[in-house]
Image (cartoon, rainbow, N blue to C red):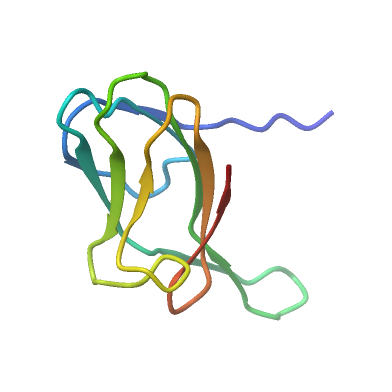
Length: 109
């Protein structure tokens, strides 16, 4: 059996997301919030001697029904699927973010 822990962060105001957050639960409120993220790369060298690089990934969900969006920006201006930001606008809308080395790949509903 493998135990996997998730670091869940709750946000209801404009903030900087700490590195290593696994799950973001956010409320946009009436006016919306902006969450700034930064790309991180983690390197490991297992016994085989080959260096492996793992990039930052996380999941996010907008948990409230208010009209304010939860907008994501990159601290260095990297793009989200080619756009300068990514927004969750509906309650229970979710997305998965994965750093690809130059920008963010985003999947969601």
